[in-house]
Amino acid sequence: MKQRIIKALLDMNLNDGDRLPSVRSMIKSFGASSGTVQAALSELESAGKICKIQGKGCFWGNTPLKNMVPYVHETVSEKLSKAFERDFAQGFIKPSQPLPLSKELSARYNVSQGTLRKFLEEKVARGILKKEGRQYVFYRKQQQRDEAPLSELIFVTRCNSWGGFSAESERELDFLRLVYKTAGKNHYKLTLFGINDATGKLIDRSGKPCKLSEHPNAVGAVLSTLLVQNFRPLLTFFADAKFPVAVWWEHPIDAVPKSFLRKDNWIFFNSTFGKNPGKEIGRYLLGLGVTEVGYFSPYHNSSWSKDRLTGLEESGLVVHPYVDAEFASPWDYKQIARKKVEKLSVEIMARSLEKEKLKTLAERALEFQAANGNNMPWICVNDEVAGIFMEMAEENNMEIPQPNIGPTYIAFDNSMESYLLRIPSYDFNTDALVEQIFYYISSPSAFDGIKKIHHILGNVVEK
Image (cartoon, rainbow, N blue to C red):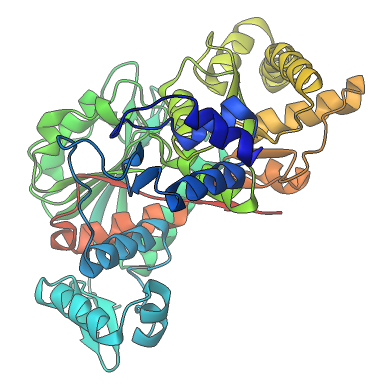
């Protein structure tokens, strides 16, 4: 296979400076593994036929075209900064805990302790860190004593017309639980507001309209936009607030109003939207040696489903999409069911509707795999989809071939269902999300220089 790839590239009659096809496209064209393609390119490079430019690709000849923008070499300091930021975004470095010892960090980042010490001292000078004995800790405002009055923090979630609330997902419940727990640990008193989607009004839990002027001593606000479709009234209500405002953003990234991104005291936290979740699953699977996968989504009329697919593709995987774009989320299936059946039967009917969609997608994938002898992992847009596939396999004796490398299923959400089914699933890291929201409320200056949309990175949890 390696010699076939080499011969095919030699037969292309490329001119000096021409860019070669991407590794991913060659994997797909030749049906070869990533290692085989890389071995072929390395042999051509050793023979002086091609040159590799890090971050740009491979080019025919010894040098790329003169007008190509050269690759900018990253300094040790720049690499260290990126690695540190990634660890912060992924929750390995927690604002509530001291940093690991310098010896451990220098080994983790493969830099000398002197280089690491200089990097950390720069953060001390900027007021992000402070040194306590031999350890570095994140700088925070002085904690209030137990006997002092609690600082008021406004917390806003969605609600119905009379101020009531009913959670729709495990992640929403996790977020609520962690907000209350972290508020107590950091000596905040939560004042709860509700945003009603139908009216666009903020009300308290008794249905009474809220006024910000009635809370002159509030020190910050935490806003949840989960399942709040009409989010502008919520943001506008706090537009003139002088205190820090942290928003859990559960919408497409490009939908954040630009006027709020320009506010110095606002920051938006994202964990589920964008390409990062797909890229992180791609990183995980490539680490196992997986190069080709199927992607299954019955909610592909949504930006998050499309972004996860794009992230998987950009990670370097060869991805075969099996998607249906009629609906945008599990919520849409439940809305249809609510109009047709009694409340107690909504979940059952919604799952049945999804199953009909997924049956068609599964049949297409199995037909492709049988024709190509390709047993690839199935990446599901959420744990529920993986669960439905496993139900279908039991009910209809539908056999999903076990891949030679990697799991049969892998999904997003890391919900309770993924534990019951024992499938690896991507955790959106709600712990890190809440911890960093509270860190921002207490020390907004620590986020100076960080983009106003702060992305939380999760990880795949194996079962």
